[in-house]
Length: 260
Image (cartoon, rainbow, N blue to C red; front, side):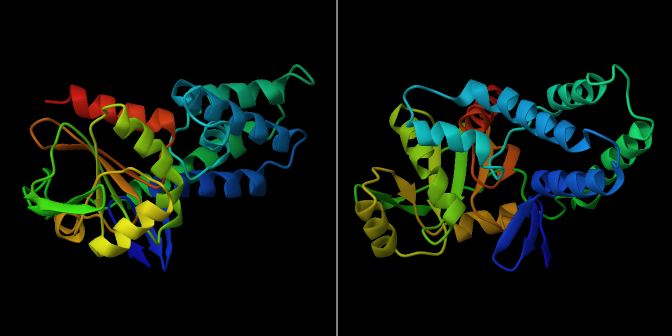
């Protein structure tokens, strides 16, 4: 098991701290909430929290399946927990116009256990808080360009062709990159031929940098995909492990653009 800055690695599986929080919360709730309508309350909580967070990123410019995956793919970032919890509590109260007797204990313990990953998250000691000015070769239109540092003031996404979650978010990243969003993709550990063949076979017009391991190691990037929001001065202001939803990508871009 590898405990990193962005989450926990279990062999090929990487769980972000956000995903671990959700998992622990669900397990605890189902173990303690033995009263009526507990399962319905969870469903309402998850649905409202997801929709509330994902709706701003949905767009008619994106394929219907991509919009749907933003909502149902629980690996993707974005949960509006306050709205979700309020809706879940309403679902418990509504049938009998009162809360079940065991609710305070179950809810308190669930929230406590769900908060534990925040305590386990290691401090970024010894890691760079700013993007290194590491020269990287660039792959654009299947041609390797001269080395240049990765630009800042947007998001930097570390990915690989063998990574399923990476492939899942590439259409979103490509669409936003083509619209002019400051999205820099950095491939990790693969040759120009491998990356170029993958992009050509999947008809992706993405521009990407290579040799991302040289850039990611000083930043503590251990799982993929990892997306960093980087300010204009090169400071890392936010991190996300796992595939992005449209709303989460927009949020990271706004953080990068607004940060000093």
